[in-house]
Image (cartoon, rainbow, N blue to C red; front, side, top):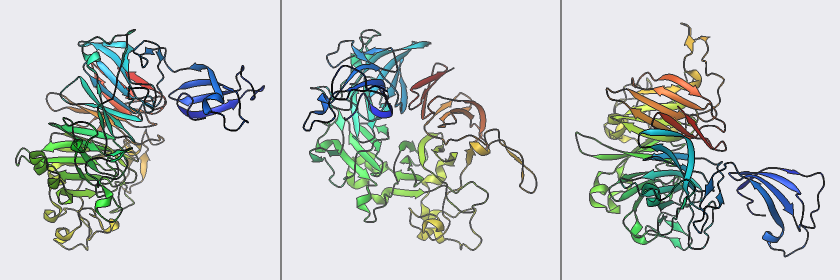
Length: 504
């Protein structure tokens, strides 16, 4: 059939069916992000019948009662959400990245006063496919902004980055009841187009844009197996000039292993003592990557962003007591740099923090404070920057030591002198790992994190003391928490199939 109002979910057949004629409901389907569809099978047997003539959907119950903008701008589009992946706040509005249904925009505040009765004011096409001259934002995963609030950048898990003009939202012309249709035409940044590769031909993998950080005119995109891809946002989108640099494309190594891992999130940090700027990358199953961006940001020349600028890629030392010198399970998902500390989330266990001074120190200059007893001094000077432990095929143990970590399932447990747990963790039975998160730094240095922790819900964490994070609260979320945003004393949670949840 193709898609019926979104990705197909649970299906049941009616007791009485007539699959050879129109006029009755034959099946009911739960469609991801599309609500519930009542399906009339019209002709399932005749060959060479168009898909559109094989079935009809006389009734579709969507997951909200909001009315969005149709392609012609009229307020006639039913709005369904249910693949909520990313949530971002800009000004008085919340931007929800909802997978196959693109982006929807919700009014959440009036100045500094929060509005708890959320309503939609704008949306992209509720479709994965272009319609006429209007371009959608399919597979929407995250929304980000530069210093210009009238332009939103949408990350797609398969189609690169798309820019949409949201001036109708910021100007106030988009209103509840008179929503605006948002268009990505003219703002499609990708290197692997239907017409072939654009710009740097060596970037041959699919455009898995998971996250972005900005430096002037450059958008530095966490591009999955391709590492980091840099776009010039002032160039004409989709042209050779728009793709300016890449580091980490697996084809450049000849090994098939991406040297920056599968980049899922990226942040920039500038060392105030040296004025050098580094990209800090959550690198999926490969752990953590650090790249010196200084020369490239000064020149804009792709030659200044080659593999010699990769400082290191490593998997964190496993925190479990029974696995000495092992590596953390799962995937690194998100990263934030606050002050001189980088905080990473892992989908398997939780959170880990490193001092930036340790991350940016060249491997050749590193001498681990803690290492296996039989490891000779100075061995890290010969280490491969992508193999910093013996279990990863390296010459020895050359990984930085974490400044702090939290494994929720172990938090709060108490052991006796023999290492036996005498008081179990109150979270021991929870299922979930840390995903995307939002930090909040207060005057005086108090640092809180709101962490989307999958099936465990949302965790409020005090991480003022980097060595000793403290769990303050936990809230369950229908659908499981995958991303968070903070505004006006509210925590907005993207909850996958659960849509959007709001907490005070």
